[in-house]
Length: 407
Image (cartoon, rainbow, N blue to C red):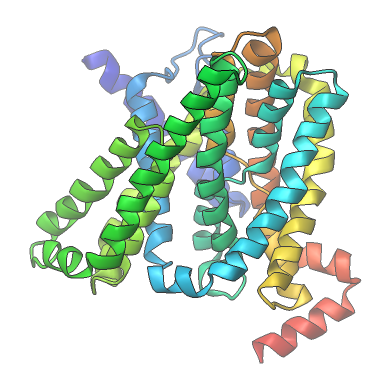
């Protein structure tokens, strides 16, 4: 017990130091949390005989709570009425995002001589943006209140729903023998469970406003926070147990609470809890990163970073235009979609249980390196979006448009 408590002491001390460095340098804390996890984890500090934070089950659970709370807050900002009214736009932006980015990852895998299933796994890792990282950065930069947040959040919702289908398919293909009759039956069962569960959540959000309101109708702050967590965490856990994205489930719960009349109080009382667990999540990504294994995936990693960064910017830009945003704001949508994170690591974990050396060794190493690079690059691009706009629009057009929009 004492050793475990000391390990958590190392974790929070490392987070505090990293946070202080980020504030001093004026940088986003997210990539630095990842770097802190690498340095303080078993593959760096542990390898040199220094005290380190192990990548154990408890830290993983705390990281999962970070994902759940980040997506719960995203749902609070995105009511069901807003989702329904924007459904066509979400569909257009999401299809553009899927059609541009998934085939790029698949093409890279096939060009490297990988099998179709291995290439499909790579395609998913390259396709899916990080809901956790993007949402956290939107909040930190104040973009959550800007017009470009709507296509960003809408596309993230589309991705999270699409990835539920994708995971059901690739799980059967990677682990079930590649698509015979049993594989198709397994895919069908997985999809039925996933959409059945999400359908129940949709009904609860649609008709449960009064129930959500009564549940949180309590003056005591402690009871208020505990009641909120007593809904979102078990629902997310049930989703995960059924093979459904816990992030999507938490998002739906957030949408349910968004119309309860308690949204502002939830945001006020839970924001610190969210930020603590979110920090653990980003740190946890670094804990699983072994820098020595990245060499085996260096070639696909370099190709993917060079190709998929502009592809995400382009698809996000087109998604912004589908929402009828200006070129200036649409470019910010594209920049905002660059970070990759938690779902890429979920796909990597699935690949690691596969049957080929590429699945077991190269794809997991690629995913860790890719998430590390893209999370750092994406948050820096978002933070310096003004520079990106000047480079793309050659200064005058962007500045003129920005001033017109802010007037």
